[in-house]
Image 1 (tube, rainbow, N blue to C red):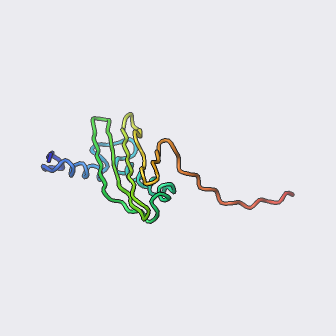
Image 2: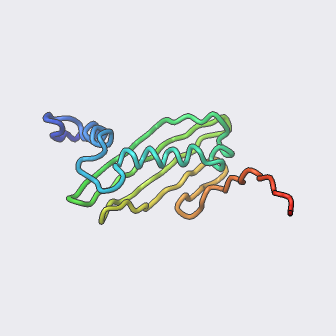
Image 3: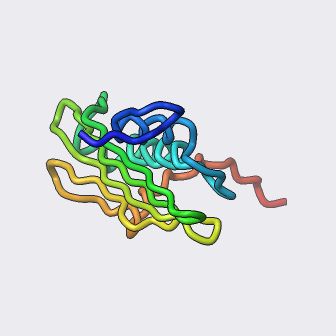
Length: 138
């Protein structure tokens, strides 16, 4: 086990990383904080109909692992999350780097029982707009 100084004491490195992510990172970011970014990406996957089609509902989370590293004004964040539903189990993987005031996604995919979804390459299916009543011609 590796120990580091974090929050005024000597703690396991994983604990320090979790503290930093919960607080939004080790430093100030002009854009989205790491914890907010990860939570938003998890919501994207959880709300995607392609994911729920593979896993069914309800979907539960387990087996989360995450890391955050900062080097001066640059940083990287990654997480892996296991999702389980009545139809099977899948994994979410996300990696991003922070440079020049913005996050750049390196990897963002879901791998489930029926195949993989690359969220960087494909958008979620559009939800049809509600029908509108047409006005009769004058």
